[in-house]
Image 1 (cartoon, helix red, strand yellow):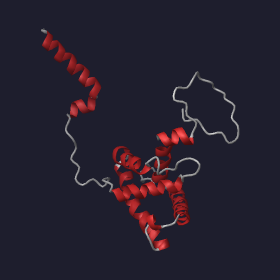
Image 2 (cartoon, rainbow, N blue to C red; image 1 turned 45 degrees about the vertical axis):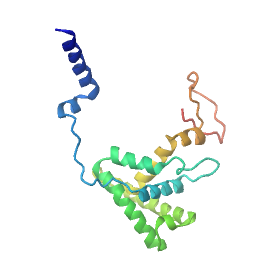
Image 3 (cartoon, one colour; image 1 turned 180 degrees about the horizontal axis):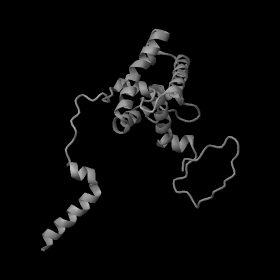
Image 4 (cartoon, helix red, strand yellow; image 1 turned 90 degrees about the vertical axis):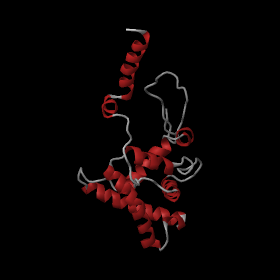
Length: 189
């Protein structure tokens, strides 16, 4: 075996390990997507930012809009959710607009803060009832998905972790029991 063959063999072995067996066996071809339903528009991302801002508003710390939770939701729904939950989420955006039109006669983005909160509180009650009676194979309620993604996106963002939570970039030693005073922020690290 010469040097070139040895390097090729090592590259194949390491490449197979890094790429993973399923990708290695199925090849590197991209799946065809025909007009994916999760191709969110800029208006839909702005709507998701507003939903997030209603859930986690700006107070003495930045709100969910500052963490760009709308763009985070798009990535998570597109890349991580099963098809049934993707469909529920996408259909939920339209359902949210319909609920807003039905209750207030205008779209969610046109509502004032109190109206947005009132609508989302009703949707939260609706999702709790749905989740209580949901079967395992049923998709999650769209508002539950939006709420969970808002929390995850906000508290895992730089804004949420460093300004809403206590953050130490390089923590010291592990201390299993740290005194907690009422009103202290939770730890991000």
